Image (spheres, helix red, strand yellow):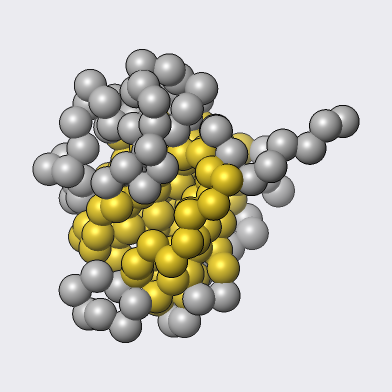
Length: 178
């Protein structure tokens, strides 16, 4: 709505009226490292972080309310730290895509897990915190994810109603000397 600035510390999400420089709300979260707005609905945000944290929130009656948990059943806190996520707007459909420390890519639609690409980015060791999915970005017909080792995975719409995306291409990006 261009009126609210949302920020996060490790354990709290804050909403500010930036025009009045006043605090609108604060909500406790679980180890948040990333926060994104919904692309069409500024009253909805998603937070993610270590310990398998991925949470949808809705701003209602001057409070940030958590939505029902969507991924507790598919992430294991000991290995599935969510490293990044992005809300994508693709052909009249909103899709939340998240990447994990273990190299998995999660696709969430309508507050439900649509598909999980296990080890889309093969990782040598899940103990190394410099690995895992580091970026997710929209493409015209899907999205791309990137891991710390320079591997990019391109996912495109599949036309299949049960799994809306498929891995179309995986490639290693060459390092450029500077």
